[in-house]
Image (cartoon, rainbow, N blue to C red):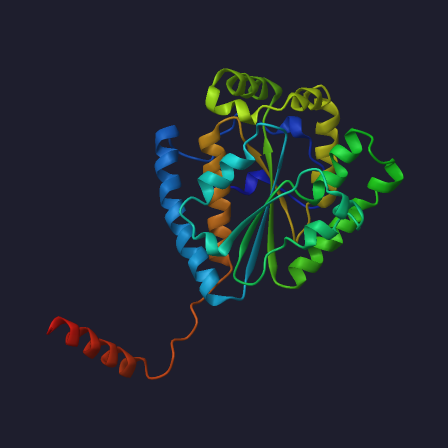
Length: 280
């Protein structure tokens, strides 16, 4: 499955209207085929994450940003299903606490970045400080406009220190969002997901699209690129993100640590212990 068409190339200006949120053109199959392909990818990601944890050298940071209902939680569940939680951590970023507000805006972000051998998924991220902060006029432009540079350099530090950074914008349209809001109101097991404040954000859709375009154009870098993921079709969204994660992990060229010396002697000793139990 190809995914280069969804990459925001550094230096190129993009418009979100040029990305079709209904697109599923890079997979030669239907929804059922896509779900079967995702199961295979899950197994590969599970094995690669175990390899990363065992090697204990590499780090992967996955950043998810989106409008409400686009599927950040769904991606996390679908893509990382079966992965050992010992080596994976999800960091959600909601409204900052008083303690977090007492520090610089990247303080709470840096504290959640992955350690060696770990995958961390950011459910929202440092980009909240150039998205709702901007759209809701929580800070003046002279404050938030500087943050694009800050964030680029922050991510450069992470990469220079050995972290691979993947950034996904999950792209839906207003019609799809409306249908998902309705599902949350009509299906009892989804009531908990509904937040009346989301409808207020929806009124600012055009402002958010403008803000997201600025994020994509100013912070898709060689060291930390953005992907615009068409997300009206949940199965394709999950399959595409999983493919990019799998390919990224493969390209990290990880290896299991060397076994201890005299492994054959240890093997023989343990074999004798097992046989002693069998003889009882």
